[in-house]
Amino acid sequence: MGEAKPGGLRRRGERGAVTAEMALVLPVLVSVLLLGIWSIGLVVLNIRCIDAARDVARAVARGEPVDQAKAIGRRTVPTGTFVITREASDIKVVVTAVPAHAPPLLGVFSPASLTATAMLQAEPETP
Image (cartoon, rainbow, N blue to C red):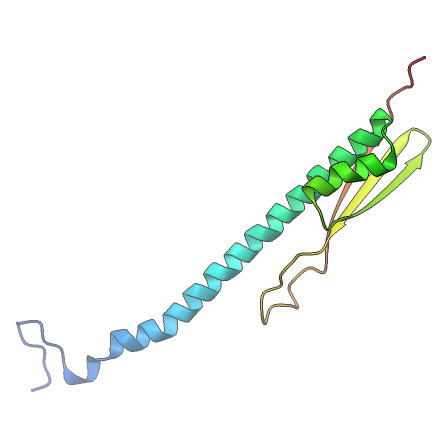
């Protein structure tokens, strides 16, 4: 009575099993997808910080004013904080950026900020 028939009919107890499984699995899959997208956003922001630090250090090493160098970095990381230090001929640039969004319920795992550092030597002055 409860056996499957050759025509493809299932037993009465298995009727809603697929729907119940999908109801449990679908939110997990969507959450994993959103977490992956958020993680990719962090990687992209980190790469942008690295690029901005290099660009600013290069500009300062060429002898450009600090304000212009920071403006170059702000093109890449508009919300970043730039700290430029100079010791003799060494130029160090630290770029810090705060991620725009944090995933809900995972704020503990979200970094407060991303930081990138670049160091260069200043180009020798030409007479």
